[in-house]
Image (cartoon, rainbow, N blue to C red; front, side, top):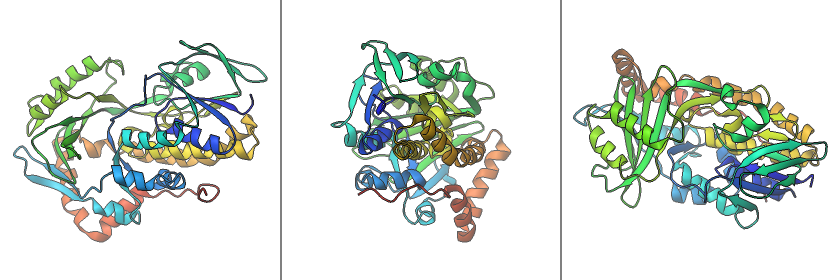
Length: 398
């Protein structure tokens, strides 16, 4: 039992952790409240230490098969004409071509394929209670019978159930950054600009699209909000109503995009928040990914940090021969300072997506059309943004 590990969450961090734990001789089990692996999700830019973990897992060929090489970020006015933007290939140059854009669901699917035949998974269930003693943790599930595990890991996202059960009121660790985001895909949208992120912004709101393969388009909306909304993160009907109210009639293709929303079956909506905790573990329970240190969706590296944290946690458990206290301490000691710096940098990004004033909007457009045209300045700015000065332990996997 000491080497049995229950992981809550079958998104990205959870299956990554299961993959490495299995390789290191542990016995991971995943529990996921959804009835099957989740699909869809928003488009993410993937680079840095998460990219390195994916490389060690042998995932890169599949990620480039599924992903996209973004060519341009373009801001448009009411008439659809370009008023700002920049050449997005600079991101690949700044990362030595170790950069790909991919839908989050596609990344999760590729990781899942690596573990589905090796790791026990309980779908359609959730942890109801945790009872820890000197030898392990008794886990009570919503539906399945109670079981014993040596450790429990919460990889269940920003609104982590495990975090609430182990640390108390989980919402006190969520820090709202003043924005909400929504994402979905739809087929048959009539306007397409291949390999271009096209965005339209009015003060406090941005609505954007990106052409996908097979006649699909991905849409991304950002809404500035001075205080958290009284909408539960699972209330999709209320979320859709809010978007219709806030984005209806604002200009450009907004009404056409809202019409596409009505036929979307992969709708995502949530607050732009960070998870900030002084400790990521309590007894035999630890947290990884957004459950412990969500940098916010707009930071662009949450999936990569989740994968890197999962790799480090599995490595620490291997190095400590399963001593959970030593492993959890080493995992946090190695990673927390780096994560804290990423979170500080992320707090400034919301205003780039959706400036709250006309002056801020003009400044954003001037910066991207003017300064970003100067190669040495754009290269410096992008390298500072994507720099990951962190060395993962051990070499590439065999």
